[in-house]
Amino acid sequence: MAPTNLKRIPVALARRGYDVVIGKGCRFHVGEALRRLGYGAGLKVLVVSNPVVFHHYGSQVMEALGAAGFTTGSLVVEAGETHKTPATVARIHDACWRERLERGSL
Image (cartoon, rainbow, N blue to C red; front, side):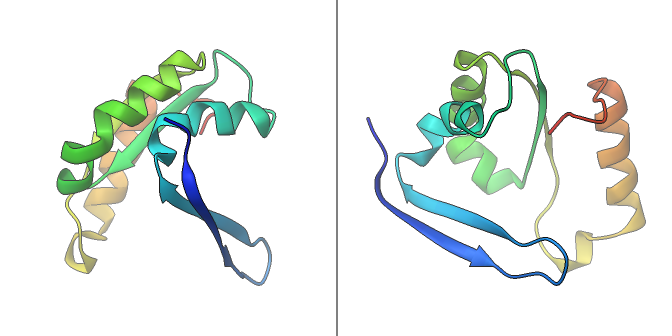
């Protein structure tokens, strides 16, 4: 299924803005999109999500990344401001270490 109704939402930051792309079916093509952006096969990607989103879409995103040649890992963290703590940052750091992410990893 090709993504439909793609919408780009610019996030304007002082130093480095970016776009968020949303649309029906995007999750099935995330790997292809990264390849079009110049990221090569074999690149390590850590998918960080909350439990609800990962439950619904995680396996599809991981599969799409793998099909495009990326090496994937995942980490599920609780949603919400109360969980944005040094302990959560430490969990993300540990997951990066566990997955052996490198400077060019995503």
